[in-house]
Image 1 (cartoon, one colour):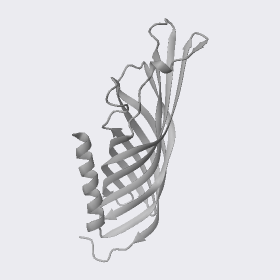
Image 2 (cartoon, rainbow, N blue to C red):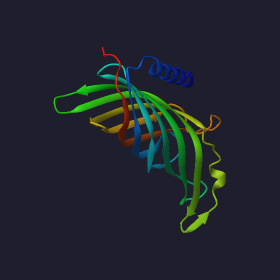
Image 3 (cartoon, helix red, strand yellow):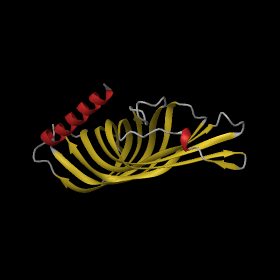
Image 4 (cartoon, rainbow, N blue to C red):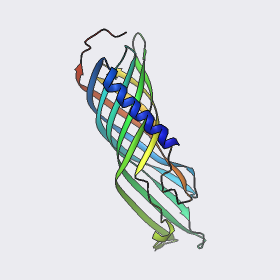
Length: 219
């Protein structure tokens, strides 16, 4: 049900941006990701990965304070997880997931203008497709390294859907934003008992390269 709702929202937003926009801006973006896994799972410790994102964006303006943003990003996420090996008193294993996505976020942006500051908030959703995946597994019992591939036989889902919240500031052609995204789908396939989701906080910069001026007044 959640997947269907997100698909409908994404398609509706894409149609609105092309049909009713008054002016448009196009540019490039890049950012720094802090990605980790959250949710009900069996792991003792979860550590974040520090990765990056880069992409292009189009911003469609409907009024002085209301816009839709469509982005296409190369998004790198992942996390490290540590759990005990129950058969061994001091044994533990480590799972490191490095995940490379192509992500399509669609956001509704509302400007909050002050005398000296041009701020904005945004809410939206994204669909991500996993294009590359690297998993490192290791296990230890005191100083002895173990083969633990059989302890983690789970597969990452190819497609993820995320909910997004944004707060940012605009400086002429530049924008700086803080973004929070939380997956509404589990990270691993539905046949596994792991209810783990991907959670990411990113600090992003945007630079407008080209702007199409409005042909009519904004209401």
